[in-house]
Length: 330
Ligand SMILES: *Cc1c(COP(=O)(O)O)cnc(C)c1O
Image (cartoon, rainbow, N blue to C red; front, side, top):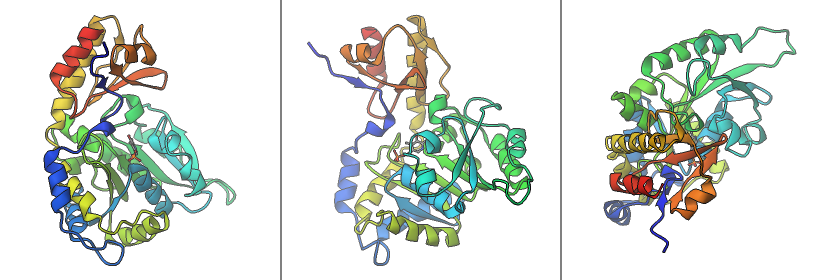
């Protein structure tokens, strides 16, 4: 009797639709390792301009984008700051230490879910004797995945940038879902990305591309990032096939608000059924209730556990009626 599973594990499960597959098949391609693939170049230019940067580089994954940023910014043994439960701290196999050779320092979410306050950033960087740890980088995450897709706005972003600069820190933004933050706030994404040293954005989550992220920075850093990407095995030759999907994915930015409405519908329904649920700001619902992930699976609802709670993520491949059906099953 197994009804179709409603898959709310992650927005990464979204599949390329027919238009995207057609664009991939028809993509104009070159050799992106030898010189430059024309479709890749178009995607990179478009993302750079959307985010308010001079230049950008396609990378196979968000994890590689974050890693390249850390490898660009950190010297061996430098400390970097990141909010508790940041993806770069706990979900990237320790590559920040293993490959970028940085020392992680965890910051509390004292300004609200997902972000530290400017005072906390300033206080984390001390002036010590010559043998003191050198803290050189602040990593932020917007939306913050494990804080339930939590958003911070352009004013907070500016204040955090200013705090970081005042104590001599470089800044990297893990903007895997910064598109969701911009959609939730109704602002251009550049309001939330401009002014850092590097920004990483994902095309393969709610936007629906099958693969790919983009790292944005100034041209000199992107030139160096291209070398590091090759070193990590991330140079792709006829990458235009993947970039063509990314270009169409960028057209999906505005429809992320549908996912946000569906997340609120789900959260409200869970609350009515006795679950403890925070108010979702974007497409992620963190909830605690009477059912485990395994019990939900028996009802044909797929979810995961993060930070001790059950995480449901809405996305392009689940509709409002799917959410209503999930609530019916509960
Ligand atoms: C998914 C995610 C990443 C990594 O992206 P991958 O493409 O899965 O490597 C980085 N940061 C955050 C906040 C994410 O949610």
